[in-house]
Image (cartoon, rainbow, N blue to C red):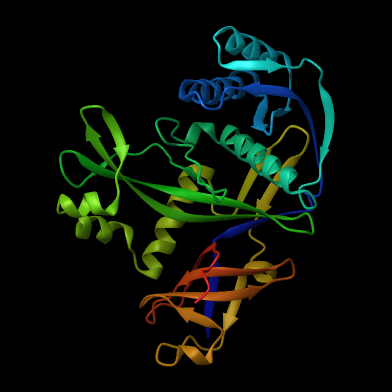
Length: 314
């Protein structure tokens, strides 16, 4: 019998059924690159110095904490020509993230701000410690040394995390290892793609570090989870209006016993083999049904489940 290990934590209660926040009208010039850069920097500064969490969504600034630092920021950016207008009329707002899609986006982003604030001493900030993807994931990178492939190309390890909000009000924080290649150029540093790594002749070397065995990936993921969160079992996030604790409810929620993991006849089982050690399986828990990727090595008894994913038809 093999045990499928989910890399995820679930909230101890229905913490995400509703979140009490405040908001005010805020319109800035999104087509100006400097405006986007300056707003992001100012909001991060307010989080560090004033412990106020704020995100912009559809011409509203949603926040938890004190509004005065945000008003000061808005006024300065308006004087610099980055903000069109803003309102000093603050509204109380009860977010219902499980029912309203826009509230879902705002709640998840506020949670990420609070998460990075709660663990700011163990997360690398610049230049890419808070990179965000379109599907709602963010990347957390602990301070660490560079792993050089050439004099110009190196890589970091980090954790990509995704908060999934379930209809019940529970939250699941999925996490997985990410290997990030970077390149030093005359204009600065940038992330590089596989074609660039291939052109420099280091793609195979990079894959040796990034494509790990099931056990190796499992152990490396736990190593970096511990570097960021200081433990292997829980994440505590203070959102000011409520404290959220996410833990491994392993026996009840995150372990699935498989009678057999096939390699010869995968069509007889409810999952699709992607590569030699990777498969996709539909998993049902008390909370929801998700499609998850997991890695399996026939010589290992710890298959490793990664992120929920959306699969293309066919």
